Image (cartoon, rainbow, N blue to C red):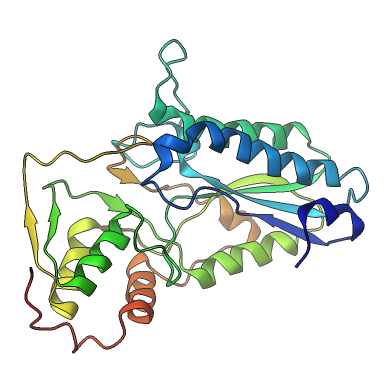
Length: 265
């Protein structure tokens, strides 16, 4: 392990930047930090190119670059829309990511790839964070009832192996400066997720029409992409969103039998 100020002391073939705020629970308080955090580490890598211009820079971007309107999934024809006269806190995250992508496209002679990730779930997730799956799994572990709205939102969780496959394909390209939406073999609805945890782990949930959901980065009913541009470099996902959820939740929760019949508090 080395400090970031030692970055220029070594030559690296590939640099992957996945730095960001991992939890939405304190995002509102850390929004100003997020702009500076994104620029700080992005500029650190861009400055590195002065000495090592052949390095490949892979940056984890976000589907939030499309804006806050996800009433339908995005695709290759979707435009980003921002009400520039009324910028709200829901816009901040996407704008920070879009600013980063724009800088990268301007540096067209450098090897830079932005991967727009719409959803990622792994066994290392912070269960205290306010994401859908972390809250569901926390309820399973604690034997608590999960409270949700009737909205059947859609999410797309990239499997760790598929994400690694896409990264490898980018590495194998000799010269590349581009952006790709990241997608799994199949997206998943909220109630498909809930049905799985009910059947396999005895989760109990209640639907409340009046429940208010806090969405710091904007409401995302259909947060996934139909763009298949990544096929151009050979990307062919092998795992559906549900595959990721099943495998990674098993690593967190362990044996399913221990949760069945567990009563809620």
